[in-house]
Image (cartoon, rainbow, N blue to C red; front, side, top):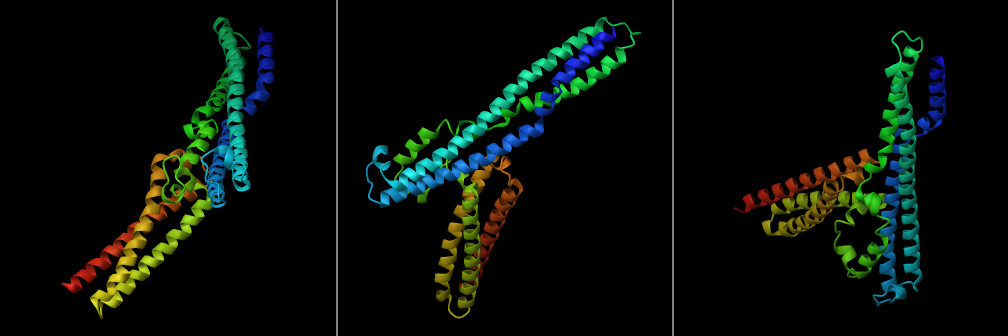
Length: 304
């Protein structure tokens, strides 16, 4: 019966290369690439919006895509975004292929496991090969568990990652229909994840820092001026309130991203940095609110 052991070992050896290939580590690598490519696609979308604004500034007033495509700025924006979307879809396809191949390999492993199980059931307890076959069975079971986890990685992708490329034309049409000034005035739920792109994060981090300094400066100035003339404190108090409103708007947007798009943060290569930044925004906003409220209360008490 030793020949069965050798047969099982030979089949197991044939599967070894694939078993080493289909790992959770490899699944993680592809998943991270997808997170990066989606971030680049979001940045491409952001660039497309900018190119659309430039085309309008160049005098393109038509709502037709064909008319905009004649403009060099618009064409550049569309091409850049489209390329980023294609690259992202390529990564998503790579994940689908990886999982598909892993499942096919898993089927071969499972067949070998079934053959071994069948052999062991009819093998006598005194068989010289029994312990070796059982050892092989145990090793194979662990390998099957690993490949099974790897084969399920496509299921870890969120809807945004899976469907972003598929919705490209819809997104183009949607953006084209937006009012010219809407890009500066609002960020709806489909646009919010763009806030996580490095360029935008740096921009808003700088804005938050500037706003916090301005709020503190206006509050200090208001207290100083209130000591001489309560009415003189009003302009600084009003300015501090306006700056706080801008600060709160930025923080609210980022906290909405954190709440509605946890996957976008989890998939980022800079997850820890992002979470730390969002926490900092929240803490600074809360501190600014306390500062403004405290200053207002102090001045009101002085006026009483």
